[in-house]
Image (cartoon, rainbow, N blue to C red; front, side, top):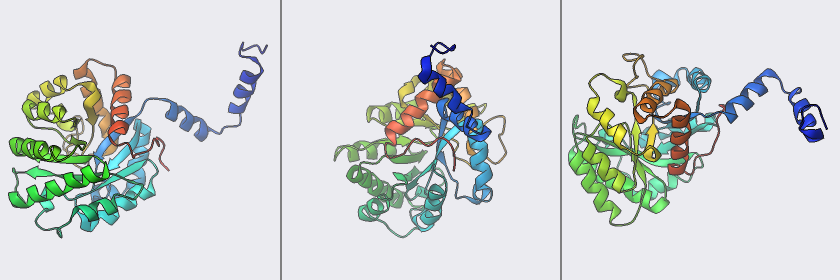
Length: 297
């Protein structure tokens, strides 16, 4: 018996550690510890793409192990996909933001599902309805939204939904489309009322929380977070926008999701470690095509 009490096999296991360099030891430790996922960021946007290596490194150092970078225009999808291909711990979506619905070339289910066959593409969107800015006519937004949901239904991949000042319309379309066949998804950067959260949850959707939850005037959102079951919660940055306190007003980046997660953990009455474990499990349950890669290339 070895002095460690773990026998000869244990002794060889310990000795093997001596052959790891400092970087390998650090990475092994990182991979065994709970980590967070930034479920929504825009790595192709210039504020982040200009320092992509630094952004990924800072995220890793902060304990953010996986990132989902989001498509907003099919005409810019190559740049989104390039980011996902560049870093092993980055996945991406494919789709058209409601702001772009009227200016992007019209798409269809076949094109979306074809693009989604790439191994790095794990979702459709972001799509949905934005009646606050109305950069695109409502009819165009709704048409695009339905195409994405149909693609989700056909391909079996989730849809990432953006909604602002359109709670009733969003819920109505989701229910109507769900009646044609099941699909999954998430309401990202949730800032709507509790009623939409309840309806989305009833449809099997997840709710993703951004740095908005840390803002002083977001009391209604904080109450919604308390209501949503932890097994349906995700966290995100929506970077480069919406930096959480204490970085509000600065360029947001994936590393800052740690502040949002800490805030949500307190609201839910759990440790930061448990929140990390649960939201990461949720992410990979929803985005089941994504792979566990918690150290950037």
